[in-house]
Image (cartoon, rainbow, N blue to C red):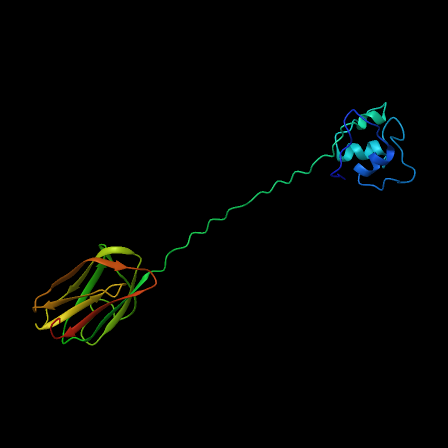
Length: 201
């Protein structure tokens, strides 16, 4: 039981009521005992002073021991715990739409040299009239390569990255690949590959 009050240092008188006050009791507490024996009795001023400050608990006891007495302060120690949660970024979704090509066989796709992962719909090879859904965890600014087989010339493949940047390639009938450098690939977005009849505009 500590109190904000302190007692005077060696000057001036100290009274039992002052001691009661610094112990947080009423100044006129009845039956106030300085120690109540050679070992301070529970509830006595010396016992309370020892519990809430650094008052000597060894007899003989004297009121002069209360000079400069300061109640002890309570130290609170707070311990914090840090929890680290690793969150995997959402992959990029890839939609390959070959519904409007005459006969382009789209045979594969890589981002940063890593093949995209099949999700649903048509898997590679995606022939004319089909579409497929894929994903990739290759997120950043990377080179995208789209592979295709032989086809009727006069068709095109268009690629759109996560920032809606479109790149188109006119196809000449031979098998090959379409390389798009510096493509922005962002998790949680969809990028598009479209095979179509007609030339790039």
